[in-house]
Length: 429
Image (cartoon, rainbow, N blue to C red; front, top):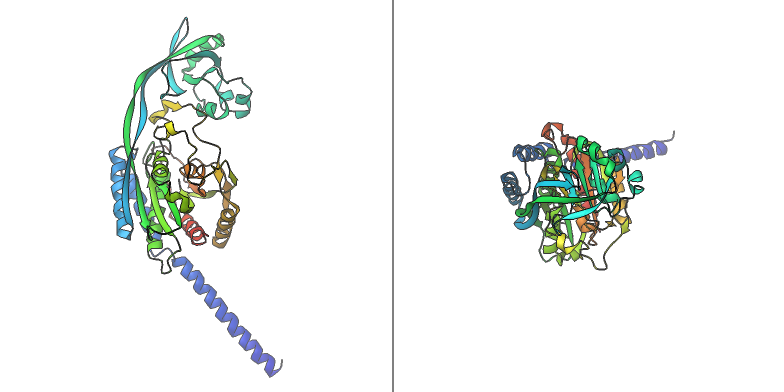
């Protein structure tokens, strides 16, 4: 090897070493991008929120969560507003099915509690196996009938795949006694009343109110059955730490960032509906809403398969029934659920640029994600109104139970979701 070759080789090795060092430096910066102690702070948020017990909309637990979220946002330097809203629900005390010869108590009921009282119709008795299989259910001749089933039936499927007049779940012994009367007329008698409940959204803003562009990061702060560590203290915790990260970011983003925690998601995405109604005009400038719901597990799902469909003619225009915007769609403990086919349009708003951004961000992080669609959370309220919207979930299991506790969550998983969301936001158009 000549002296010239040795010199060139030396220079090349020096350049390669410099590039490797620079790359390592970039990796180190990325590793610290969310700040020292990210996992510890995130889990501290989860511990506090889950420690409140049930955070059901309108309860003391939810109120304490709202105060905590507001205080944490203010510490970060966000401009914070608590936007309160009222909604209607229904307290079902008793429901009875009456035939000409018999009367049985209803354990669970799918109907419209906000419509006219009194429902009568031709009965159709279906075993739980039929109810739980959409293919069998679609062939069962359900439309217009009063469906009766029994324990282990997933009653909500009736409203998704058929158009019954109502559907009732009764005790096995009552089902066995009555099933021979399929086709007979049945009447539903209910005792209950409408009730008004209250909740609130917490809205933190980073950037000028006058900004022409906006990106929203969101999560719901209420829980259902149990402390709700994964569902959804986890999403709120990641949101709070992303607010800290973006507030301290040296290079400002070319759009306003909103960090929103919604109330009453579990009762029908009512906080999202209230936010849409209140902020309709400014949502015309929203380029992306990225929602985080039920995190802390091993498998990462991101809504990115639905494409763009069912969108309104004008961005920000809701297609939801106006009379249901402030109505709960089900009750605690599963006593009743709303049975109306027009509760939510079949819409999706995940354009190709967002799908590509999610894929690139995940690849850059070495994160395996599972593309999903029609995930059931607040982002759907915005997608149907023409807002580009997606959702990430990584369930730690045990949701809607007393076992949904912080010990089941992975702090590393929460951080990986945060990195994914941050990268997508930083690449927003």
